[in-house]
Length: 300
Image (cartoon, rainbow, N blue to C red; front, side, top):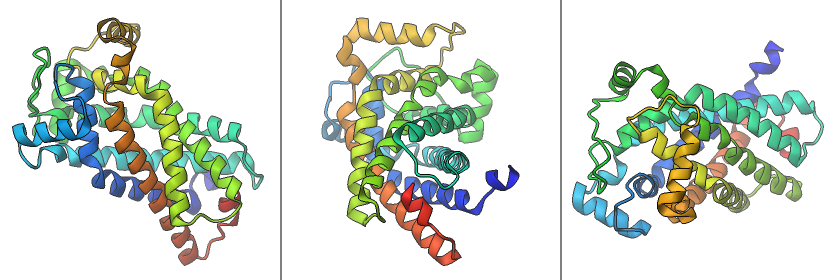
């Protein structure tokens, strides 16, 4: 069992996925900034991605769209490393050289997602706070924060709000494991249809299609997740996530759950497409350099 858990092959997939995601997110980071503002700052008048980015630059400076880049990249690197490692380790252990199916990909993706959420949610809570720190909000109900860095944010949140606040948004995050699970199910399914190694263009296109499907299906949960992570008022009720969802529907209608979808689709589809392209190239190149067989990896 130990040999299966700690394998070079799973490590290659994990490192490739982490490097690919960090590179892709860095390229398209301003789009994520626009998406997050649209989700949490409900009184902002600008509703399109170009308009909100123009407002942010005008009000807060040229580098404002990259505010919070470092904590986001740290969280993303850890999160994708854990997810890719768990996904490929569990899949290899389960299949034992047999070809996978969409249902297998979905189940393995969900389990890997749950492990990832429980381990990395505190990092995402902190990075959401840091990313929005210093922003000029149009909503007077949002209280400003003052953190000097990642460690200081951890300390202040634990001291002022309790350890449990580091897992704010865990409920929608656990439901959102469907997002990467659906994404990987669609991606792996399309990849199997090709029955060969992917070209750069093919990896980019099917990565984009897989992420577009997953994001559209799960976006209302992502909106609720962002609001909960940024909230500095922690509710101890287990029903608070459901209450927030119903409150958002009552206040803004069902369309309120899709605030920022345009920005999210633009950012997440391009980011995922570039990530999968880089992941495939890094993984296949590493396997060749190490002299490891990746034949079953292409067939899975």
